[in-house]
Structures are given as structure tokens and as C-alpha cells.
Amino acid sequence: MSPLVIGLTLVGFGTSMPELVTSVQAALAGSPGIAIGNVVGSNIANILLILGLTALLAPLSVAASVLKRDGAVMIAASLLLVAVILLDALSRAVGVSFLVLLLAYVTSLLIFVRSAPVERDIPAPAKSQPTFVSVLAILGGLVLTIISARMLIAGATNLARTFEVSEAVIGLTIVAVGTSLPELVTSMSAARRGQTGLAIGNIIGSNIFNILGILGVTAALKPLSVPARFADADVWVMLGSAILLAVFARSGWRIGRGEGAVLLLLFVCYSVYLVITA
Image (cartoon, rainbow, N blue to C red):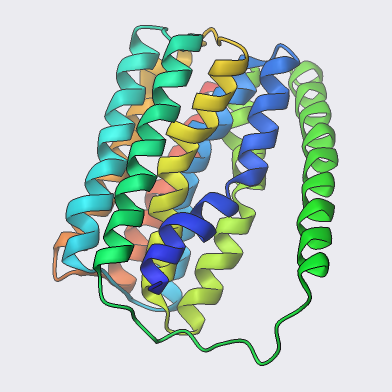
């Protein structure tokens, strides 16, 4: 599998596990603002903050096929979420529909992988570890993620009550950025190694999974009422960020340091807006 496809699937979806556990637990705890804000805020941070920092570290090349297929899916998923939030329709049926769409997307990627020529630019590990060690590592990581998510939600809700800030704003800021740290580490590490396809794929795959997978699972388990503030600006910033990524990537099929600086500046402006409207 190419670094791009790995980034879109295994890495992109894997780094979204903190968002998944956090949003599900927040919904079950009766905090829809944190559950939804975590997804919307993470998608904004993934593009404006993480991709901005990564592009400053190393200009990122973008394959035309990626932008036309996977970038289009990311924008379409963002548009779908805008419509759902405007209609306040995060019902169980909508959650199941999101999961069906995610399954269709993953299936199309697997078909693409089988038909595409194999790329051999990923060095094989010097020594593979036993299967049981990998299983234990996965289980241990999952347990730590669940525990961390519980602590994150408890701390976030306490902050909201203490400073009289809405849970939606907390979800869009502290929770969203906190759960996006795996994407930051993964993308910057990939960029340092020259695997720009993995860095871009990680962001696009993560954003698709955040909407279709995380909100899909969360709404399927417990329908969510949408706080009014998301429809005012936040979901539009999320959609605009996805479109801006496509525009920047289409220009020369790369995201350079100049574009990275613009993304970071926009993230600072959005953060200031959140502080003002908190």
C-alpha cells in the first residue's frame, strides 16, 4: 500500500480514535456540545493548525488523484454535516447513514488499492514483533484512550461550569485540540521523513472519519441535539477550511510554507473569535 492510502485509512482513522472515544463518552454523559464541538473543532485544527505547522516544516506535495477523489469526499462530508447541523437532525437514522457512507468510501479505497500498482517506498521493519505483543499494545492503547477521554470530559465540563463558558466552546477548543495531537505528531513526523503523501492523507482521512465515523457512531448510539452556536459560524469555518485546503493544494499541486503561514494565521483569528464569543 502507498503512504497516501495508508494515511487515508490506517493512520487517518487510527489517529481519530481519541476523538471517537471522547465524543461517544461526551454524548452518553449528556454533553452534546462537547461531542459535536470535538469533531468540528478537530477538523478545523487538523487543517488550519496541524497542516499549517506541517507545511511550514516541509512543503507538501499533493497528487491530483487524491484531491479529486479524497479531497472531494472530505468537502462533501463537510457539506453534509453543515446541512445536518442547520436542520438540527443528528438523529440515530442520520448516524447510521453516516456509517453506511463511510463503509462505501472505505470499500472504494480498497478497490482502488487492489487495482493500483504497488508502491515500494516504505521500508520494511528490521524485525517484526510477535502478534500477541501487537494485540497487547492495541488493547493497552485502547484502555489508556478510554481513561484519558473520561478525564478529558470531566475536566472540560468542570472548566465550562467554573468559567461559565458553554460546553460547545470547550469542545471546539481544549477538547478538539487535545484529541488532535496524534494527527499533529503523525503528520509532522511523516513530513520530516519526506512522506508528504502520508501527512496529507492523515489529515484528509482523519477529517472524513471524524464526520462520518465519529458522529455516525455517536449519533447511532445516542441522538444529539445541536447547540445553536454551531450553525452561526463554527461549521462554516470547518467547511471553509476544507475548501481552502483544496484551493491551496490545487495551486501547483503542493502546499508550501506561504500557504502554511496563511493557515496558521487563520487559526489564530478563529481562536480569537472563539475567545470573544465564549
